[in-house]
Image 1 (tube, rainbow over the protein chains, first blue to last red):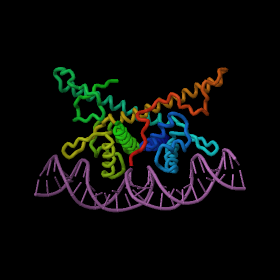
Image 2: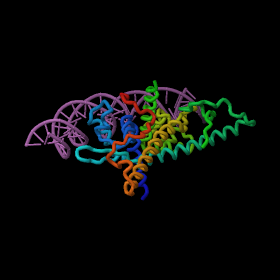
Image 3: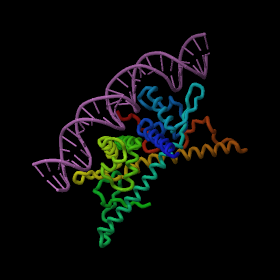
Image 4: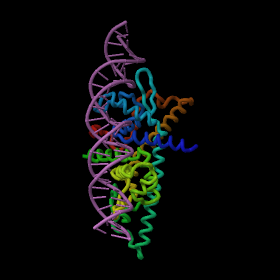
Length: 144
Length: 144
DNA sequence: CCATTATTAAACCGATCGGTTTAATATAGC
DNA sequence: GCTATATTAAACCGATCGGTTTAATAATGG
């Protein structure tokens, strides 16, 4: 029964992406990238109660993004890359897929609308962040 | 001052990851990967009201994951890969970083098991050495 | 003009979120 | 044993979420 597996996968993607959707939690992961941290250390940089930070840690933990080791009275947190990898795989798949599609579309439009190769115009924009343009206009020159 | 840019970046990451944290919306993106779709077409597979599906589309749109073209009375949606790329970059950075760290840890443990002296303590060391920073380390003081 | 179609707007609802404050729990160390 | 420390539990609060239902808006087509 694969539907169960799919549902489980969907549930973990829900949890992981939700965990990543908060700046405080992303900052905690950033901190953890430098090494293991106690909960108190993770909480310190933020201007919120320790209890609130503790909840953020637990959200990350339930999402499987970190692992907690209770050693004495301190809880030591480390990154757990598996789930992040799962999310990364999801993203990568669509990223690649979409890019391919857009490239194909662009090529098709160019072939359709160019009896002559007009070269490429002024498409030398340095920053393509959030390229906003009507459909089918060429502005990017990315290849893979 | 780049903090504005960082804050904006953080806000869009919030939006994008939040948009991705819902299975319905991920399914819509999956559908859109096959080509452009009207809102009604995106809504069809789900057993919810059209209004509810329309809200999901708007969440994706506000996150910059899709673009809408109003043509007559139908709204045509297409994927917009830029924001997904942003999220992908964030994930890739940490994924790689963590993997490197884990590899280093593994190497350290192996070295420990070898007759060579401990080059770097496996567990106990605070070990902040060579901590490359992801985009924007010094930021705190979040939104709200 | 009028009915149909495609979509959003608005008001509402229960659940969850992100935060607080005030306990409770457990360990460390004198 | 006592007290300080590290962390969670629990109750609460306003905001947002994901859904509904009922209109409103706008374009299509006979």
